[in-house]
Length: 339
Image (cartoon, rainbow, N blue to C red; front, top):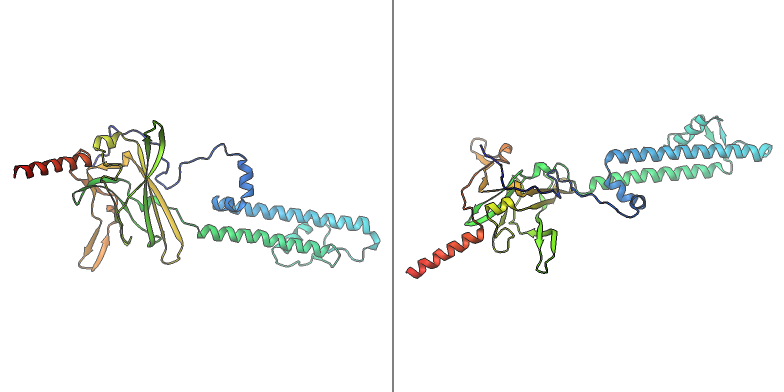
């Protein structure tokens, strides 16, 4: 059984949760509420579906109530000021609030007026036109929000696309940081792009300190995501892990943010998933177990999903990649001098 106990690991507050959600709260924004109202389009796109449906229901309810009151006010004004001069009432078939409300709902939903019908009075056609425009505006906003929200990059179910742990092992004679990715639903097969960003504390030469310094990690090409692939970052002279040994890895505080982007071959819609690994989730001296094998009987490649997160012990020196390289170069130089 593999133990993940890290005695020297210090806690790191995540910027990106394992689920892919950003652990960032914007506080003390000036005119925060008014900004949401002024930028109503982006507000509708960023809120949850249930709030969009509730907003549409509230907008329709307010419109129904407003036009009902306007119809009643118009009829009262007609009876009070026109009197006997009125040739025909603006609405026939009702004189109650419920009747006016039914007329408004029937008009705005275009299901017909039934027995309650407006006439061709001077203000009646104006009210009908305003109702039609209001109905088009509300329904158009709903269609726009639904279409754009469905077309934007999908970032759901982020946890199933990445391995729970990242490992450090030797590959082709080089220390490598490796994690696994997979495309379960075929949403990233086209234009696949994987990025890794190291977030850590950095001390500047001027004496200042950057508490959250973002540094891009160079990744090897992962190829096509037809099955789970291992994404490799080679720890060389340009890597921020070049001087880091096993104990320093345990004691360091950092976060590696991973972003997976791509398009679906079926729908063409872009998708995006992200996760992160802290120092506790980067294991020194382990490697991933193979999860793909060829079945001679079925003549197909079999992907074992249960092996996606499985790792095994892999013996590597506890020193840093820099120290190991220096030691090898010194040994090579000594052997050359002896010859």
